[in-house]
Image (tube, rainbow, N blue to C red; front, side):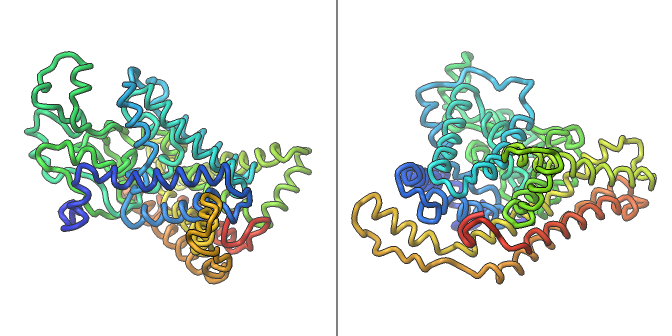
Length: 484
C-alpha cells in the first residue's frame, strides 16, 4: 500500500488545511464565468463557454480524474464553498428526514437530468445550461443551510452519485493506517470534528457546534469501519481532524470494494441496499441510453415507438424510450440472468431479486467504460475548442481582443481516430465487470464460481457488444467534436 499523503509534494499539499479551498476557488471563478457567458453571451452552443466547457471538457476531465486519482471534482466542488459561506450566517437546525436517508431522491433526480438533457437538447442551449448550474448551486445552498451535515452531497446531488459509483473504480481510497490506534482513540474527531480546547467539555450543543475548529466527516463515514469510496467526497476533513495522523490516502485495487459483502460505515451491507443497486443499474443503462441518443438509429427507434404506441408528442416518445431503456431492459436482462442462475442451482437460499441486485454492482466497471468512451469522444474531438471560445468570451465581456482574434479552426482529434480509444474503454470495462463477477461468485459459491458467474457474464458481454455498436455509429443531429 502506498500512501499519497506521505508523498513529498502531493502529500504536503493535500494535508494543508486550506488545500480544498485552493482547489475550490478556481472552480468557483470558472462557474461564475460559465454562468455569466451562458446567460448573456451569444446563444450559439459552439461559441459559448457554458455549453463548451460543461458538455465537452468538464465531463471528460471528470472521468479522467476519477480513473487516475479519485473523486477530485467533489473535493473541489465550488457549491460546497458557497454553502460553507452561508453556514457562517445561518446554522442548519434540522436533520435530514429518516425516511429520505436513501438514494431514491438522487436516483429520481439523476434520471430526470438525463431525460432533460435529451428532451431539451441542453448541449445546444447556453442559457439553459447556465440555469442548470445555478439550480445546482441553489439546491446545495438551500438543502445544506436547512439540514445539518452533507445532506445534499449524500442524498440529493446527481453528480455526486455519479462520482460515488464511478469512484468504486478509483485507484485510491481514504482508510486508517493502524486500526490499533483507532481502538484506543476516545475523541473520534474524524467523524465528530475537533473542538477548540476551551470548548471540549462544553455541554450545550450550540456552543460545541460553534467551537468546532475542524469538522469531521459530514457524510457519517467512520474511518475504522469505512470500506471503499461509496459516499466519500474525498474532502479530507477526516485527515485534518484526526489528532493521531492515522489516515492514509491509500492505493488499492480498483473495483475490489464492489465484492465486499460486510457491513460498512454509513452504508450498511450492499446486499441490504436495493437503492444503491438500482443506482448502479441506472448508472450502467443510463450510459447506454445517453450514448445511443446521439446516433441515427435512435431517431429510427423513436419513430417506430411513436407509431407502435400511438404517441404524437416528443416528450411522450422520449419518456417511452427512457422507460424501455432504464426499466424494461434492466429487468429483462437481470431477470433473465437470475432465471438462468435458478436453473443452474446457484441462487442458494436467496431470492432471484436479491441475487440480481447483488450482481448489479458487478456491472459498474462496464458502465464506467461506456461513460468514459462517450465523454472522451467529446473531449478529444473538441479539446482545443476552449481556446477560441475563451478568446471570444473575452471580447464579449471586455469589448476588446484581450486574448487575440479567436482561432475558430482549432478543434481536436478526428472522430474516426477516437473510436479505437472508445473500444479500449468498453473492453476494459467489460473485463473489469467480468473480474468482479467472478470474484463475487468465488465468495458466494467457492465450489462452482464459474458456473455461478456464467449468466451474469452473458449479460456483461451482451451489454458490451451493444455499447460497442452504439459508439461505432456516426453522430447525427449534433456538432461533431463539440456536443452530444
